[in-house]
Image (cartoon, rainbow over all chains, first blue to last red; front, top):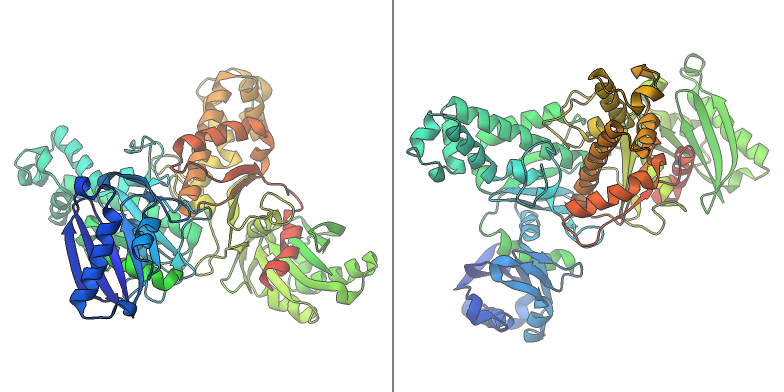
Length: 316
Length: 316
């Protein structure tokens, strides 16, 4: 049997045919056209399902489920896309719409951050784990929670907002308007903000050199690379970042005590330069003698497709 | 059927006979004698079980389980008291010791904060809830987590340390040595610390008056009462406290989305003066349109007995 997963993004709709082991065996991508798809998205997705089946040489009845990952909030019953700003979808009962087009398959809806957490269960960082947490460090901080080997959709169905747990309530304002969220301190953006502040206050080391004096050219990799080369300002910024991230990880450990915490997103590409000091800091702060393995997330761009597809394996 | 619960504290051992509905129908208390009980605690507890049965006029076979709540850490298998400083118990396999004395009953071991959370399931704040969190605001901040209608012992069995989730990593040092834990900002002690700091910096309002100029006589109630009377310094301290507590509550909501959050401990006795602004602040910060009911914990001194007793109903 196979499953089909969609990762519906603001630029592209990526679909994949996934086998029982969680391997994506074929793919199909279309540009996402906001205007053209208004009111016709479900029909488009159903068309893609048929195209994938035809192109892959499998039989229609070999597909066990169809999953839809969307970058936005969904309702507690996982029926309606409440707000997906990048897709310009608001209060759209997408699951039922696609279900109506594809009556032969169970259709499931999931948030893309949650999909990424489900994906890690299949040959990724969460293999064999029952309790696990994914933190994705990008423009914002997202993630998903696995409890009992299944996606945790929240006790009331609202999902999770890991990036908006409190971390530093005397510190930086978050884009959400609340002071001190994890996102305000652990997003890739926080590295950039701190570097720009350093430049603004006269810092003229590697950070300055690498951006040619233009703070708008700073990105997270600039900071990480300069810290690797022991630039004092960048090292200081990176140390503060790791300290904040370790506290975020400890919060999760002290509440859930998961077996694994996976870190994804751009910042995780720093590899051991991030993970070694992160694990050490968590060890300093954690009350437990043993605690979660802290590992890079395995799936990046494929996480949405894979998680949406495999959701059917954990939920049905 | 009945269950027997023990709340083993540094001063007293309190035992109770609990009926199926979670009502304590008879009690028995003995002073806890550290020296005399060294190596003889299990025997003492077994003696109390027999005395309770004899005094209550029930038959020995009407007791379904015996639970032991201890103020300290226990191992992931819930067999050994790792460290209970108030009892001077370290690495004591208390469950097996008591089990050997009482082979006729299942004997269970639980941390006292976890016991308090289990207790709320029985006619308390967690009645009918499947996902719920108790925060106890006292000298420290403790609490317990209910997931799926049962005590959450952590994904790896380490339990939870809600008081040592991060809240304000640029802020106050916690007694645990880490900066900015929930406990450093939300314990009753934080109200006292803030009031003493105000006095030290020259504050001469109600706080000064009520303690007769002696900062050591300030307690949490002094601060709450002065804030109720609109004393400016006390109001400021209490507002900061509620703000910090609301962020702690939001952290829990954004990770677990529980149906209920119960607040216990001395500070919760402030009643609506605490709960009304707390709920308002949580509403401001929370991403979800609807979220956990935030309510006073029902059980205070009885929580240990009741939770230890009823653990048998949820775990066996």
